[in-house]
Amino acid sequence: MTKVWLAAIAGATVVVSALAVSMHKRQSETGHPQKAILYYRDPMHPSYTSDKPGKAPDCGMELEPVYEDPRDSGTKAALALRGGIRLSQDQQQMLGVKVADVEKSAATGAFHTIGRVVVEEDRIFPVTAGGEGWVTQLSPGTATGDFVKKGQALAVVYGREYATAERTFLYALRSLESSRSANLGDYQDQPVVVMQEARLVLQNMGFGEAQIQQLEKNRQVILDIRLTAPADGVIVARNVFVQRKFDRGAELFRIADLSRVWISADLFGDEAQQIRAGATAVVSLPDRPATKFHAIVSPSLSLFDEKSRTLKVRLEVENAGSILRPDMFVNLEFSIRLPEAVSVPSESVVESGSTKTVFVKQVGGIFEPRIVETGWRLGGRTQILKGLKPGEAIAVSGNFLLDSESRMRAADTHGHD
Image (cartoon, rainbow, N blue to C red; front, side, top):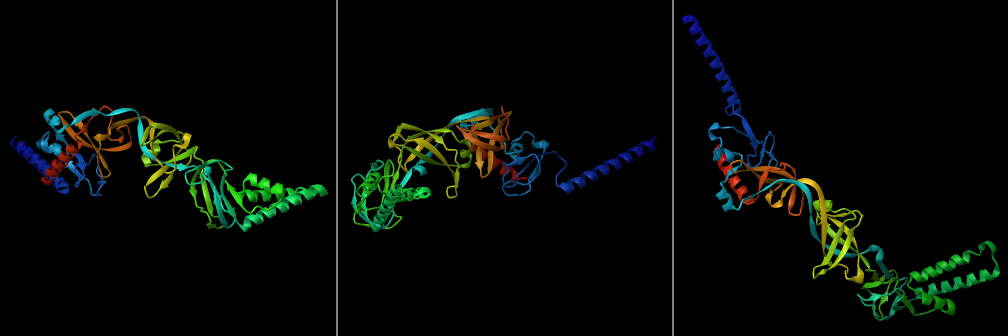
C-alpha cells in the first residue's frame, strides 16, 4: 500500500513539473502570464483601443495587448488601462458632463452658406468693333451701370472699314434689284444670299436697323455710324472715350441682362453631397435680410476649385427689379432632409486628427472612450457609421475634459506597466 501511495505522489509530481515547465515556456514566449487579453491599445495614444491585434492608425506601431489582472479588476488602474473614467454624480455635475442617448432618426435642418452673384453666360452681350476707327460721340445714359434698351444708341464712330461695309451693302442691293428685273432663271437666288450676308455684316459691326433702312433708302454712304445696344440690359463695362481710336475686334461695350442671374456657392465635399439638382435655396442680402429670393440648384456639373478645395455649385434665380448685381455676396439657406440613420449631438464627438472619439456611459458612472466613424453633419447632429448602437448613453458635454483626463490616466498607467 505504501508503495502504491509513493508511486502516486511521484506521478503527480511529474505532471505538476511538466505543467510548470509548459507554463514557464509560454510565459517566456509572450512575456506575460497566461491571462486573458482584454483588448489592444495604441502605445502612443492609449485612448485608441481595438478588440483585435493590428497596427495603430496614427503611427503604424503594433497595437499592444492589455491583459486581465484579477488584482486590478474594477479598480481605477483597470479603468485607466482602457482609458475609462469613473465619475460620481457630483463629479459629473462639477465637470458639466451631460448624457444623452444615441438615436436613429431622420435628420432635418437648414444649411447656411455664402454665394456670389454671377451674370448668366447666355445673357452677356458684347459690342465689339467691326473695324478700326475713332469714337466721335457718346450717347447720353451710356456710362457703366446705366440701363439701356435694345436698339438704343450707344456711340457714334467713324472708320474706313465701316464705309467699305456700307458700299458692299449698296452693291448687293443694286445687284438684287438688277436680278429681279433681268429674269436670271436658276441664278436668281444668288443675289438674295449676297444681300443677306451684307446686311448681317452691318448688324454685326453695330449698325442699328434704323440706320440700315436709311442706307437702303438714300443709297449714300453714312460716315457717322451710330452703334446701338443689341439687347435690353445694364452696361457692365464701357471701354470707349471720345476721340479715342479703337482696333478691330476691341470690346467697346458689354451689356448684361440681369433679369435672371446665377449664384455661385463654394461647398465642401460632404456639404455638396447633401445639395441635389433641383433643390431650392432661400437667397437674402446681408444688409436687407427681409428681401428674399428663391433659387434653384442647376443640374450642371459642379466644378472643383483646387485653390479653395471646394465644389462650385450653381443656382439660378429670377432677379425682379435687378436687385441682385454681379459680384454681390448673398446668404443662402438650404432646407435638407436626410433618411434615417444613427446619429449623436455633434458636440459629443471629440476629434483628434483623423480619430473621432465619443465617451460611452457604462454602469456605475464609468465613461469609456470609443472610436467611431462619422458621416454627415446637419442640424447640430452627426451621423455615426460605425461604433455606436441606438439606445447607448454618451456624454454630450464636458467631453474635452473627459478626453484630457482619460489620456492622462492611461499615460500614467502605461508608464507603470
